[in-house]
Length: 552
Length: 85
Image (tube, rainbow over all chains, first blue to last red; front, side, top):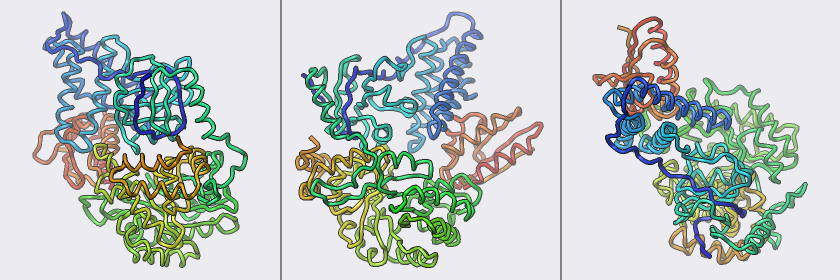
């Protein structure tokens, strides 16, 4: 029996027939000509482009949220007048519609990939739209997903595009397997959010024959091809045992020998509270308040802020609610908080606390709103600042909190300097919270949006673990609120490093709770030491897993 | 000649969401609208691909041109979109 191995990025096990996503539609042969009426051929091409645009738009509408914007932009490309002029011109010269579409796209494809960077990365989107139009014209099946099948399938692809994944649900997909992709990539995050097992970076996946039964273990990263019935039963049963049925009030997160590790939820606003409660969050580890501020001409009023904060605070009586003050700048620019001038590298510019130091009134209003929202509730409000680089930053923030009557001021550790001098920061901060995604970005000088640098964003990078260890040893409670905490094995390692709480997307909580409950603190510490002693992320992961038998 | 020279203030330049908003607004108008870099070849403001291919970065100037009914108002609207940081 054949067996493939990749990186398990979303735990659980899934079994079903492989649905292999077709790669690119075949290129229409150069020189293919239509036989006759260019006007009719042009109409045929235009109709195909419009049908594709309408379908992309409809998918976006159905999916909502970010997917809607992404797909609306793709529909705009399919309806692009310059593109359609190029197609018509080529058809006028005798080229068949399929080939004309291919060549018209090729023109823009070359320009964008020549520019590189953000635009270079859009080339995959162009190819996807082009293939859809050509498939439409040729009357061949559309690249992408099948209609909902009778039973869930295992989706196998080289990589997955947002257009493909936006509408998926666990009812349709038993598991994801991709040949490419990384642990913080789109597929991994999406799969964890959906609660679907996923294995990425799995060599050989894309050559699996369609329809082959696959058994996917999203914790170990093992994909078994045509497994025996016994094997399927055993693996699915084991996975179910790791994912306990959620009791009404789950026990607090802890290792098997009772060392507590608070399991908290990351939320963006009151709308995320029900999911956090349903998945047994003990509180909130990261309330990103920026959603209240984005896409507006001015800051929300104090009253409006109080209402939003109070909704969250009252949902967690007696529990911890950790609020991150406005994190603007870089990829989240706000028109009413303009940067001092042109910033050649916004990610290294005025963002997070740096913005608030330039606009202290905005922070003062937010802190006052938080203090007023907490008054009369029993929630334990903690407030923390993003993008703190120095102990001086932390003192400034603590003073602002004190001024507003807030007693628990903490600091996000996202900048390597802050991790290195975490002890100095701990002298003025009540707690620390490590944002692993940004910390990796700055530690490795690798833009978190740059797919080509995904290996440097791997949360198992030993250098990142070293920085987390420094923060965890600083002498005040230290949590992790980045993506890293949602990986059950890494969660055990973080606990072993001395991290006292883990905050994550709510759906990952049951797995992390189960993983912690299957290991002693000593095992977690041994796994942490082994991971830090490794030289590469792959070796770190393997070394840690060897010491975490409950995850096998 | 109805024309505006504006500095693109969006941090991401005339890419991503600002580009989409810009093109959507231009596409709603019945009249022709073009965009060029100063001294460069104008392209249709209704074409997202042409706009992206111009590769306008944060802090760069663009010249927007339109003629016909409602040109002034449309130009004001488009200039406002790119002036948002």
